[in-house]
Image 1: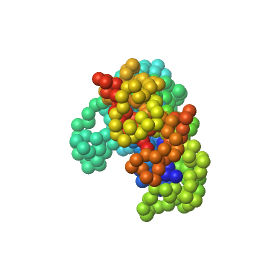
Image 2 (image 1 turned 90 degrees about the vertical axis):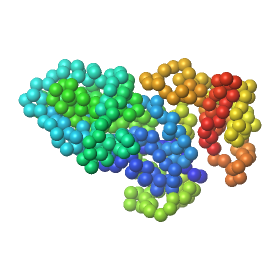
Image 3 (image 1 turned 180 degrees about the horizontal axis):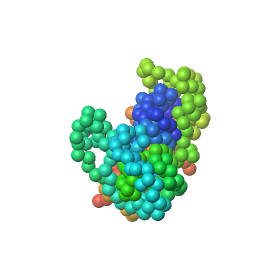
Length: 365
C-alpha cells in the first residue's frame, strides 16, 4: 500500500522543515511529500507533513491558526531577531534591571488582535521573486513589505526579571498564518525600551494538529524498521516500497490522517455511488442529486481577514462507494481513504450559486 495521508511530525532543533520532508521521503519511500508551514531551523514542534495524494490540500490551509510557546531574552538585539543572529545593539544592564512586570504586561498588550509586522530580514518571505535571506546573505538592500497578521490570544506564562541579560519572559500565542514570533519579540523589546530577542520557540499546534499527538522522525523510523544509521540514502524512490518488509505497520497507518480532517471549514455533501462516479469523471451534478450535510463555515461566518471567495462555496464530497466498484481510467483499482460511517471521502467541489450544481475541483482518489 502506498502511504497516503497527513503525518503530525514533531520537528526537532537543528534541522529545516525541508530536511524533515527529505527524511520522510526516504523513510516511507514516497516522492510526493510536502510540509504545511515552515518552522525555523532552531524552532521545535508541530509540523504537519502531507504524503501522497494528501498534498492536494496544502493550498487550502491558509485559515489554519498556529499556536506557539516562546521565550524572549531582554537587553539585546540581533539581525535575525533571535539569539542565533549577529549582535546589533545592547542595552546597559542597569536599564534592563529596571524593567518591571507592569512594563512587560503593558508592552505585550499591544500585540493582540490585528497588528502590522515587519518580517525579519533573515526569513523565507519572498520579495521580487527572491527570499529575504538571499538579499541578506549577499548584503543587498531591499524594501521589506509590512504585513498584517492577527493575534487571537497572547498570554504571559512566566517571567524572571532583574537578572541583566539573563532576564526573560515566556508567553504563548495563537495567531494567523504568516505571523513571525521573532518579530513579536523584537517589537516587544522596542516597546519595553530595552531590546529583546527570541531564545526558544515551540509550535504547539497547527490547525487540528497538536503537540501531544506529534511523533518525532526517530519514532517514525522505528515504526518502519529503521534507525538513523540505516535510513535509506540516495537512489531512486519508488511508490510501493515503504520499508524493508514492504508493508507499513499498523502504527504508521494509524498516524496517517485523511485530508478531509483539515478541510473542516468547507461544507460537506453526500450522494449515491453513481452520482459520485460522475463527479470523479469531471462532470457537475445537479442539486437534486446530492444532500448537503454541512454548510461552508465562511458562507456564514467571517475569518480575521478576507478569505478566498470560493471558500464560501466549497464542499467535501462523500459517498457509500463499495470496495469493488470499478472506476474508469483506473484499471489497477483505487486506494480509498478509510470509511467513516459507511462513507468514503471523494474530493472537493464548488457550488454554482446560479443553479446549485456541484462542479468538481479536486478529486482525491
